[in-house]
Length: 83
Image (cartoon, rainbow, N blue to C red):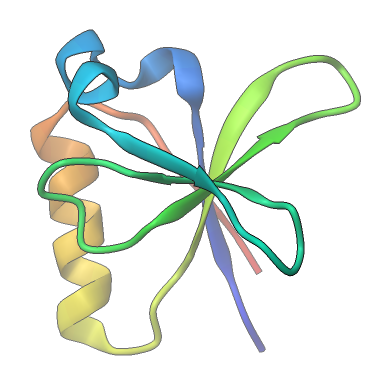
């Protein structure tokens, strides 16, 4: 079973957005975002309601999962994990 963590793009602090690296993935056309200090790269999506969110794979490895959770918490970013 795979899980994903979701955050609202609007909840990302401006300083992180300004220093982020964004690119379009060649094969899928997905818009990817790398944020300073974040252990994973996320995928930017627009929901059917027009809300912009970033999806991250929720790691199975406990250390990586805790690192992502700690990074969200450190920056005051609320997140939801969906299985």
